[in-house]
Length: 157
Image (cartoon, rainbow, N blue to C red; front, side, top):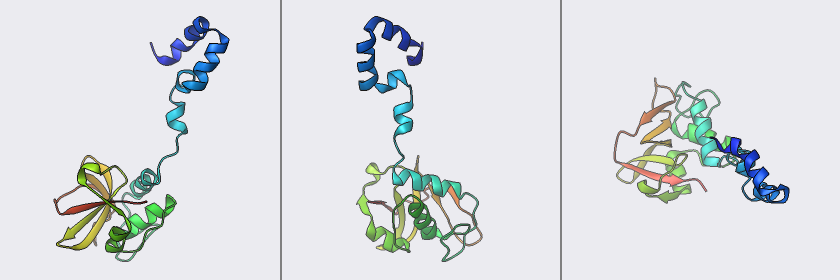
């Protein structure tokens, strides 16, 4: 039996005043799923959705949308649509984020690819070891597994 089907019997047993208390305290009993749907997505999750919506858009060096992107242009565009401002290049974006460990990463965090101390690529973490990114000339925005351990993670504040 689903939660929704139990609401009438709960109300009948609890009485009207108690049913209103149940509704006020545990609104999900009265309207299943409403609480989760009512919560706005975080800017990071919105940026992730924006990046995913650009799947198949061609790579173009120096482009930041709305139909062509380089790597940092995609992250810049996605976070701008989510209400957050980022600088233009991957290295500048790394310097602007809160640096976090791999174990702390969440969907919507930025993934920075580096060689030594130089950041050369950025994507948006999608979960399960994958990123949305705009890889290189001749390629398109796509979801791809992280291919190296030479990455750092940053969270947009």
